Length: 219
Length: 219
DNA sequence: AGGTGTATGTCGCAT
DNA sequence: ATGCGACGTACACCT
Image (cartoon, rainbow over all chains, first blue to last red; front, side):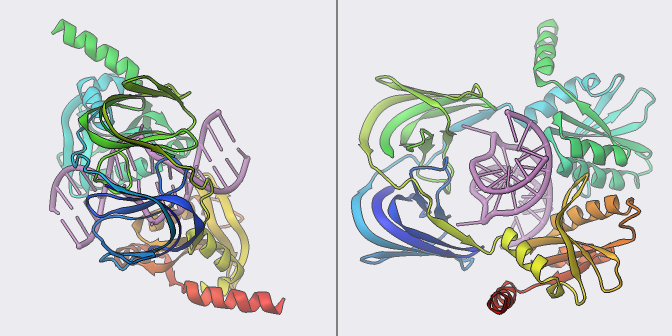
């Protein structure tokens, strides 16, 4: 990784256009060739950047970065304060835990948290338009498609609507109804879901985890 | 901005949990206190990070970053290869051009670029499901909902469809039709829009800018 | 402070 | 490659 601290300005032409006025900034070039211009503010997002794959042509006082999509970042370097390079690890080496996948696993094992009497038939049930998170049967034996989100917003309702539309055509499933399950359901998503006859279930991740632990201890 | 190149490992507990195995990485601390751990790969996104506001407690061999939301990042530092600090600019100094907001402003002022005879009633017209970009009346006085995107793809058509569904229920608006306006409209989006009776309008940002400049000069 | 929509989103996985 | 869905999305803007 190359770390260049320099007074510079820049222009970007690509998905949009931008111009960056002169200032002291950090230019970061990673091993894969991606380039980022950082100010001393703004979370981890750079002011300007070009992701790999790209080509960096370096001149005395200017860098021109182009990529196959036709985007172009030009950096004018006025004064170099530091220019160092280090060999860093190329692996991310990161292990994640507790995202939507976990919620889906917990709810598949404890579908009663979604609705009393519900039983899991299959996770990731395939439709032409993509996988339904959980296919269930309710207390009456009718099919129920469950879409799960950490945060339930409108996109998730649209997704479930598409799946339901598709599943209704399958004589083995129809009539199938939908339940939208999330730890939090946003008001607009609730309005849309209910206008389409889709039920909403807010579930507690903490309660699910507790119950799962108890369950594991018993069996 | 502090730039520390070090062999380190890390754990994060917050919105999820993650563990990062030992490796040589860049630790970046910006003036606002945010912390990022970068590997030599992966666009501009760090492996781990903590955005401001947060608190960094620095020990001999470990950094503990916590924030008011209860998130916690702990970094164990095994070997320091470089530790420098620079005063960078705090301003972004960036001017953007050609984002959706500009397009919306231009089209609201020149709705005839969307369709001849169209007149703007209101920008960001509120519905229960979110704001319609521009509400217009056409040459016959009928309501027209205009959804604007830089790049017109399927999501935008879905969005406009939802708004229209909602607006039809309002006796003051119905019958309302939709127009999907973008600088580029993808083929799939066009097919979907037209199958739903939504018209498509490809507009030229350059032409809009020119016209706007002429307009400003005249008035 | 909380909700909503945009993003040069990025990233991973499937087709 | 391209499409699709998740993301510790971040971020600006509005109530």
